[in-house]
Amino acid sequence: MIDVPWKIFSQTGDIEAYLLMKEIEESFELNENKDHEDELEDTHL
Image (cartoon, rainbow, N blue to C red; front, side, top):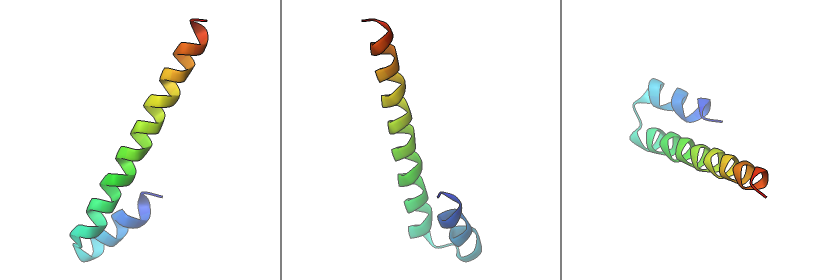
């Protein structure tokens, strides 16, 4: 999913594509962190 905005940015230099890629990365990181926290909560029950 991140590959498309990166390819657009690398070929065109379009800053909007770069910013979209960064938003997608942050969203993935937030979801991964939340999933990891949920796993930790489940093991402490």
